Image 1: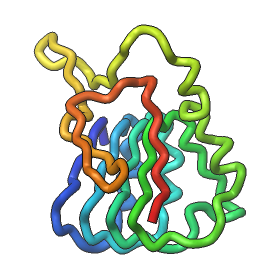
Image 2 (image 1 turned 135 degrees about the horizontal axis):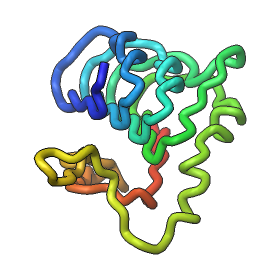
Image 3 (image 1 turned 90 degrees about the vertical axis):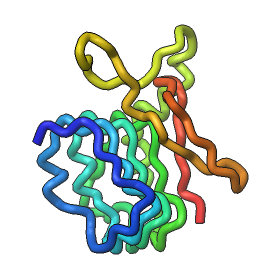
Length: 156
């Protein structure tokens, strides 16, 4: 699997998140928000070393975010949105400690750099086009996402 970006948000997809996505070692963005996916939290995605954006918002994910016997890294995440699901339990401190890039976000002030994908016909393009976030009940869509911008949404 050579996928770098997988966006299937805002559909009416049902079922579980395909475990075969764990084979997509170059995956940087996964947005399956606003569907009807019914599954436990996909801690197996934590093994994707390049994953920067993880949006599972508004689905039917359930259970604990991380169990005590599974170490989930997510070291390169800039965005994690788990809002509006049926997740329960506690957030192990190790889970939060492993969000290295989010924790270092304030150090990245300076030049504006946007998350980009590889070159296509010599042109660099933004793979986060059309990405949206909820803020104070309003959905805001972005055409590009700064690398210095960090988002954690565990609401509802």
